[in-house]
Image 1 (tube, rainbow over the protein chains, first blue to last red):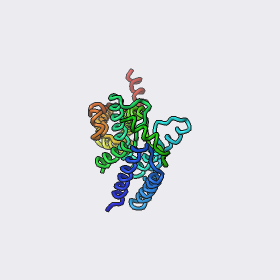
Image 2: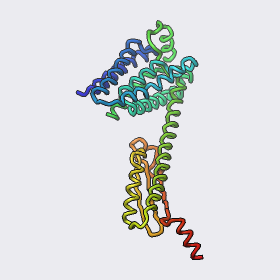
Image 3: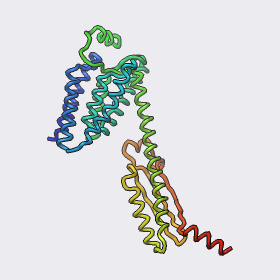
Image 4: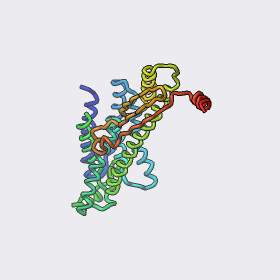
Length: 149
Length: 154
């Protein structure tokens, strides 16, 4: 079995677990974030060793952009997206590659946008209310894996 | 329902983790911004490819015009080779068809370009929308000779 498949399955399992925590507490536990980072490291090493491809490092650098933006915006108190989401986006990018990350993020944000619009129309949420993002990322990842693989 | 969920979150112990939320405002703004960026990038790629193809077409035709005392077929072949060399790995996801016509007086090169459509981009852009055609005519005669001859003729 291709190690990539195992890594993707582990990623989806981790995302489902994180979604449950995110819906309940709007937080992702540290141990789960640590697991995600280890998974990203394993994915990059596997990509370099198994496929002898150095593009994985470029992908990691590209995936770091959203995380850096979120971390840099923290001192400005612009709390539009959580740090855990940034780390999870980085891990998804490291595992799925640049094209996969773009597709997954597009799907996730479109789904979350539609969901939010629906909530605002029904009057269940205000503009400044917070919603968990990890479930949308999970749905986007599953849809992305189904479409890409 | 919403207030119960918010109360549960507020009353619960401080979570040992990093925040994983997004504001409703951001969840609506980010897809819009992303869509705008994607459209701008897509059109930029289209524009860049068009410019490269047009410039290469002109350069190939001009190089072909430098060949003196050569039969038309050889010039034709030379222009095609030059154009392939110039366009090789320079244009991104592009389809280029070109025709060359070499006469005694001039060289006509027609480049017909179109961006390769994907399943997703095909939804937003029609095939005709991202097509371009460029006709270039380059004189084969040496301008100095041409001026001298015309002066003599006068």
